[in-house]
Length: 201
Ligand code: SF4
Image (tube, rainbow, N blue to C red):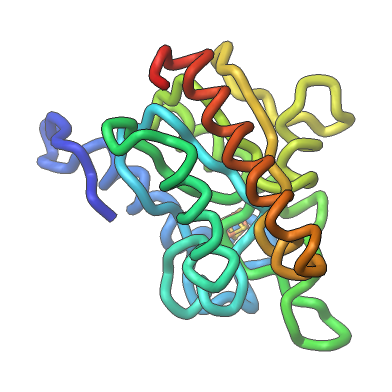
């Protein structure tokens, strides 16, 4: 992922490189037993807008970047339409390792609470690294966990405005008639939030 120039610390590593070193071999929750690799993020750091989804799928698990399958392509289209090129953004998930359904061996519908809580330490660190002025929750699970007041709310330690869009995977499963409207709603939500919180239209 492209990373904006950062001042290296005394040991020669940038804060982002430290972050990667700390988390790329993480075993803090049971998801480490079935993943191929830790899927941390993509985009630009620092980032003015941070998109937070749920968890990696099989494509992400094998390629090592979040949102690289069909849902990722759709998210990229929404971002391209919703934010001007001058705005920097990054993408990550609530969890960085593929949640596997123990019965089917396929991707679990969503990561379990314990894994989300374990990975929230990494997420908070990533938010600190990105210093976003806007967070976009991608999907209901991200909204539920990041919205203040939810029973396990992840405490993002900054007063950062948040908006939510439906998950692109949901849009892809919707019928054709619903799809166009859902995409348009996502674009308008992102566009309006960027205009309101970053003053860019
Ligand atoms: Fe660590 Fe997060 Fe992966 Fe769990 S999901 S093993 S906390 S990086």
